Amino acid sequence: MSELEPHLLVVDDDARLRELLRRYLSENGFRVTVAADATEARANLASFAFDLIVLDVMMPGESGLELTLALRQTKDRGSRAPVLLLTAMAEPEDRINGLEQGADDFLAKPFEPRELVLRIRNIIERRGSPEAEAARTIRFGGFRFDLARGELFRGGEIVRLTAAEAGLLSSLAARAGEAVSREDLSQSAQFGGNMRNVDVQMTRLRRKIEPDPRYPRYLQTVRGTGYALKPE
Image (cartoon, rainbow, N blue to C red; front, side, top):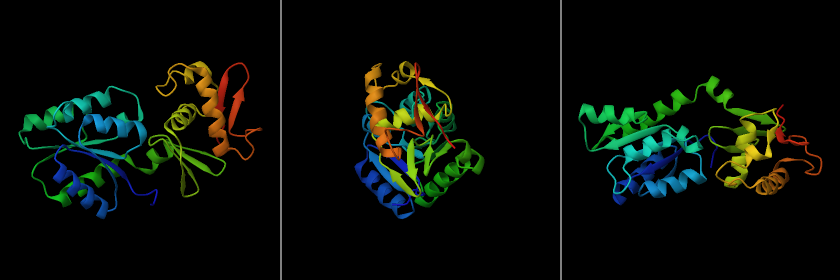
C-alpha cells in the first residue's frame, strides 16, 4: 500500500453505513480504518496516525461532538487530525455547534458519497501544503519522520514502530537537535514516568534506525541529561 494514500478513521454506530463508507472510500484512494463508537475510535487513535476522522455525531455513549471536543483539548497525535462530522441534524445551529467543538467540516445525512470524497480531499489538501509538509518532516540518514502522523519511512517504505517507539521518536523529533531529559521523555502516556522504559525503547528504536546501534549517529545519548535526535 502506498504511503501517499491518506489514512481515514470512519466512526459510525450504523454497521451498514460503516461498511458502505469503508468500501466506497477505499475504492477512491484512501486507507480506511473503521470504528463503531468513541471507545473503539480512541483505541485506534492510540495505535495509528490518521489524516482525517469521519465522525458520526449521534452515537450511543460518547457522542461525536463530545469526542471532537475531547480530542481538541488533548495534545496527542489524534488531536491533530482534522474532523469531518456526519449528522442527521441539518439546522445551522447544529453546524455552528460542531465547528465550535473543533470540527473542520460538517455534512448532513443523507449525503452524496461523491460530495463526502470532495470534502475530505479539500480538507486534506488545505492541511497538506508544501510548507506544512516541510515543517512537519524530520530527515536523518535515509529516513523521513512525519511528525503529524508519527510515521517513519526509509525511502518509500514505512518502518513499523510500536506505539512506544513512535511516541519516543515523536518527542525527540519535536525538539530535533536538542537534548531531551529522560525524565521529560518518561512523562508520555507510553512510559508512565518510568525512565527505565525509555532506555529499553531507545535500545529497540536504535536497532531499527542506526547502522551500528553500539555507536549511534542519529539517536545520541547526551551524558547526564538524556537523548537527542540529530537530523541532517
